[in-house]
Length: 243
Ligand SMILES: N[C@@H](CCC(=O)N[C@@H](CS)C(=O)NCC(=O)O)C(=O)O
Image (cartoon, rainbow, N blue to C red; front, side, top):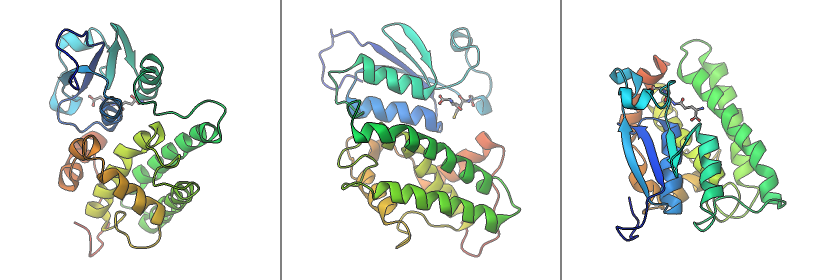
């Protein structure tokens, strides 16, 4: 992917992501590369649920985990570390982090923790068939906090008017939550019409990123069926509105 740079310019980034576009951590890096327009080569590696990974990959990355990036030949794993390295090594490309010392910068760590807390509650609800009401309330409470954070600043994004790395961290998961909870639990997040106006505005703003996220994003049906092989199962709750 060259973003119009000429053919002789060296491409500094090699990006290994999963073949089918299922891996949310790969999606974060993919979206960041697209938003920053950093030229990259891509090699697609199958996930474990499709069989053994190629030896050419596992010899570099014994754990087999994705995403992986090589920047100027230096191999990096773990999406948060990769994201930080992309910000640091390509300062000339649209920065997706606010300057250190600003109020916006001070919020990042807490928001990243909130994303993991929301993730855990989503997982607990999605993958269990018992205590459905309690799991649902706990998920909703975490969404209330996310929504309040989104409404703290003017603009649809977490840190204000512009998309940042915090939005990118949340994106693959909010995308999968909307799809999976609609399908397995009959629970609507997008266009829920009231409880989470900050989230409504965030989903709308993300959908309008037509050169980047709009063509990376997957659809509800795909996610409803790509999550079980990765997670080992998703549980219906027997609600009349599910699926
Ligand atoms: N903490 C890691 C998590 C990455 C991760 O869980 N990757 C999964 C896919 S979503 C993986 O590579 N699993 C091995 C496989 O299924 O092939 C990160 O942020 O990069």
